[in-house]
Amino acid sequence: MTSVTRAVPGLSEHVLSRTPSGRWGKPEDFEGIANFFASSSSDFVTGTDIQIDGGFTSTLAIFDLPKNL
Image (cartoon, rainbow, N blue to C red; front, side, top):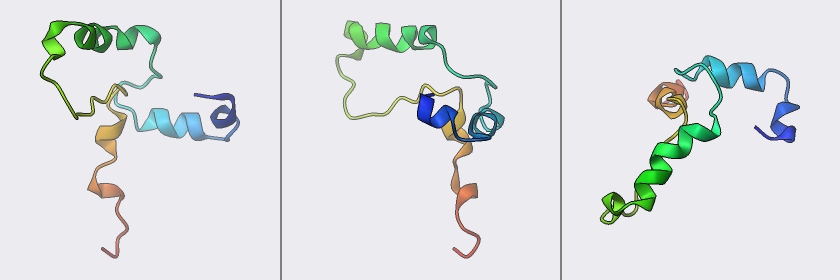
């Protein structure tokens, strides 16, 4: 979270309430994926997104679409 986003009232609480892990990420949360990409195990991986967000993006499913769709 940046100083700008920290200044938005209630944003942190809102994000955490929708994050299954219930916490903000820590630098060590990225160790596994960094090791993977630094290894030959990732040699054939191209054009993909790997979400490292404590499950937050899994809560952004179609349930957030407007009701009139």
